[in-house]
Amino acid sequence: MDNKIEKKGKMTDNENKNHEINRKAASDENPGGDTAVHKRRVRYKGTHPRNYNEKYKELHPEKYADTIEKVISKGSTPAGMHISICVKEILDFLQIQPGQKGLDATLGYGGHTSKMLECLKGQGHMYALDVDPIEMAKTKVRLEEKGFGSDILTIKQLNFADIDQLVPESGTFDFVLADLGVSSMQIDNPERGFSYKTEGPLDLRLNPEKGISAAERLKTISQPELEGMLLENSDEPYASEISKVIIQERKRGNAITTTTQLYQAIEKALVLVPAAEKKDAVKKSCARTFQALRIDVNSEFEVLEAFLEKLPQVLSKGGRVAILTFHSGEDRLVKKSFKSLYKEGVYEDIAKDVIRPSAEECRMNSRARSTKMRWAIKA
Image (tube, rainbow, N blue to C red; front, side, top):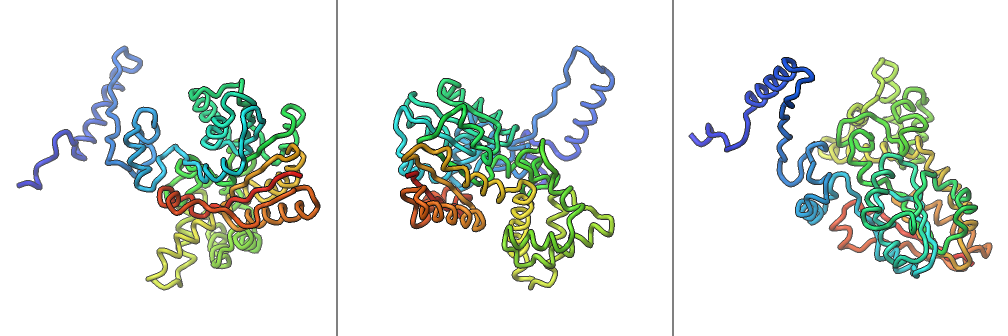
């Protein structure tokens, strides 16, 4: 008996279909009419729905603070948000004083920028850069609503490889931060194609208005080049198998254009992995493959090398820089640059060991686990 009872207010599948048919019919009968047909909002399924577009509470944190708090308390990042990492460690090192001039080379969601601006206490100025026009516009509004307007904050759409172009306007900086991680709101949005966990176009560009997508890249890349990319950019142990399957699929006319298709190709490539290990192996290989493609289409290593080379030019004497990295390739480049310039006397001091987020922070934010922070002080 109980199984036959529908919960109050819940529509059955047939009712949902009929509702949609009636709505469409009403619209067809009255095209352009004065009476707007009410469209039922998708029911919010629990505290953490699977579908990105259904997470309207998480996408509007200003209205649903309780929901945001619940999601974060479970160690997850709400959709459309980004939780800043190592905030305490960054501020402890930068030692920001009112009246100073600073640069956030990777604006993102604006969390780090906001905390650094608070340290200025209305005195001094900050510049912030980003290449993503979609998220940059949202962050600018978000920071303005917090009271950080153009009098104390200048935001520019500029790749941090070109920081030298900023100096004629800004002068040199007392402190600089670069967070090299991809923002959570980019990862979570299926339209950006950053994650294998949701269906979407295989794009992976930080600036979708420039360059070619990962899907386009896979249409022309050779098998040896793809294998080399997977090895160099993410140390993928199944680089040979994955690259062979992707090229085979392309030759059969099955171009890989979506995140799901790439996931399926990787799953196919790992066919000989023992059943007990396969699920975890596929998951890790997917993460590494997406990382390798993202690094490639955004030229991330080349961009980072240019930034590190120009960094001393934008720092004032005694200026401090902190850099957050999220995989070994990035960390190696930062470590090598800092050590080399320290030996040359460009930096008076550098981090001897990496600084990592606390265990508590990693528990609250799983995306913090791979973070490494290095710092340097200009001579």
